[in-house]
Length: 303
Ligand code: FE2
Image: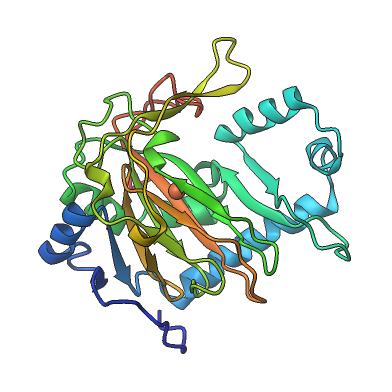
């Protein structure tokens, strides 16, 4: 969907018009394989983006209207780490709100940073969107044999306070029982701009080709299964000048190879930057992953 404003792009490389008949063209696929990401412009209709934003708005208003004990936990100075850890682990199969680290001093309700991580299973609007045929087609073109949809997030990147997301690989956090043998590494990320994403309001930045560097770090459940730990370490450090900005218009989709290094800066502008993302893995999630393994049902567009 064209937003009406032309987003400034550093280069035209990596942007391909989405076509329902051929969701991932050979040229777009080749760019993805070379760089670890590719942007499909105009993937969503205005109806889609409006519907997803309205569904998220409803979740947020419910959250603010009946603050759960979790909400109070997040606004208490002395946070109970055990409760926080449980809230986080439980979010793998729930619709949970996570607050921005910074809050505006005069706000009446706490600002939510993201909603996760089972929107694709539990919310009918997100479920319908996340299981559409074009997603299945893209997974198929990228040679996933049994793609499983395992995680979803709605990210708000609020005006003035939307937090920085430090550089990382999604495969650190979401990984298949099959390891990294799939052509998309441990996972394949889909990230839709539901509002224009610019350098001003915190668009994604990525290091082209970094998906070929070996992944060393994984986010796992701890031995007691009641919290999380990082295991291993990253082998390669990246300079800021290796990152390229990926500005996107409302409705554009970026595909992210699980190994590609990416980040987003703090939103210091007056405009929010809403986005929706999902992750697919080959077959099913690893039992070591912090995400509770879902029922072993492969991705199914007919659900
Ligand atoms: Fe990410």
